[in-house]
Length: 218
Image (cartoon, rainbow, N blue to C red):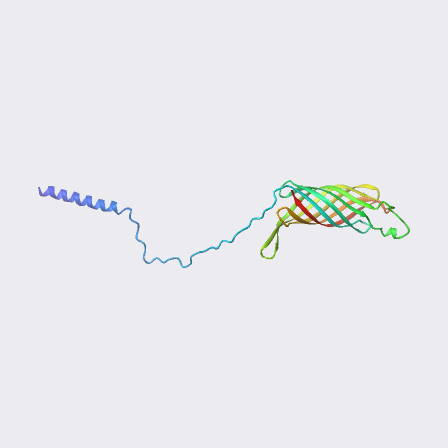
C-alpha cells in the first residue's frame, strides 16, 4: 500500500514539473537591466526632390542666327533653320538650310576687279548625323539646374555660291541647354568644306560658322 502511494506521489510530481516547463516555454526572456539605450538616435531629414520634366517628343526644330567666315570673302551674318529627329538618347539626325545674303568683297576685289559680279548670294543645305557626347547639367545658383549636352555632328550637302552648286562636307560641335521641358538653347561651331576656284586658284576652302539657336521639341 505504501509502495503504491509512493508511485502515485512520484507520478504526480513528475506531471507537475512537466506542466511548469510547458507553461513557461512561451514566456519572453527577461531583459538585461544593464543594457543601455542607443546614445544617438538617427533622424534623417528628407529633402523634397523635383524630377526634371523633359519632353518625350523626338522631333526638334531650331531657328538660329550667327556669323560665317567665307574664305577669301570675310565674315558675313547668316540665319537658318534646322530640324532634327532624335533616334535614341545619344543619336540624332539633322537637316539644315541657311542663307548668308550678299558676301563681302574679297581682298582681290579691292583692286578694280569684280570676281562675283552681281551674284554674291551664299546659301547651303545639308543632312547630318549627330551624337551627344557628354550629357550633364548646368547649375545657376544653388536652386536651379538645367539639363545639357555637348554633341558633335558630321554630314554632307550643297552650297550655292558665285553662281555654282558646290558639294560640301560639314563638321562641327555644339552645346545644348534645356531651358524648359520643350525649349532649348544651342551654341554651334561648324566648318563647311568645299572646292572653290572663284579667285582663280582651285582649292578646298574652310568656311567657319558660329551661331546661336533656339529650339522647340514637338
